[in-house]
Length: 314
Image (cartoon, rainbow, N blue to C red; front, side, top):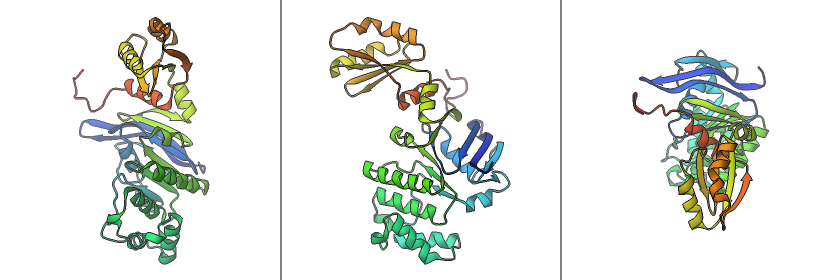
């Protein structure tokens, strides 16, 4: 379909006997920011590499930018910008030299103009002669993004691009991602940060190789089926309450948030019965609340077996 950038079904990848990506279906609309979330080792990076032609799936089929992910890997690579977790440009070259090198790789006809435009867009022009190896994490991130968009890709694949970057640099990065999407670029971005997930148009959640949820933030939270109590009180009381409630029948998750506690479970009646003995105690403020995106994800993780667990282990 012309309005779909990524459309894959049954995507599967094995390394030895371990299934790292297990029959994943994913559809990403053009011009949208699709968040890709999951714990370490969940298969996010492997999935991204299959989408852009760097890995061949063991099973499954589909298209990326209208090209078959099996037969047309070269065509996909020419139209995709891929920003890896690790900074992958040359640290002994300047910012401008790195961008010029990337422009040569893509055989861009108007190299100087393309490089100058990228420098201006990412606020790098005044640092163009600085060696990449001397940049802070935030500036390396800007350079990496500039290199990814130099050839005007239709699809931007970002693999945990803001790990280790300060909040101000993260916000500026996301402002630029939204600007690119507004201009028609499609973005698939993996992240561990819940605030970043909430800035995406849609999110997909992968855990232990399986796709557990896909939709808007509101749809994913609602789909978790969780009921949540928010409890406020003195830190010592909250800490004691967390210990008392953890593991009780009807309570699937207990999570402290400062002077508050989120107590959640999938069965409202069982949850209410579990917390009832503490609801009349002085000093605790109980109120029904909505589960957070983090609550939903932790709950989803608990429903899926770890594919790194040795065979036969309990």
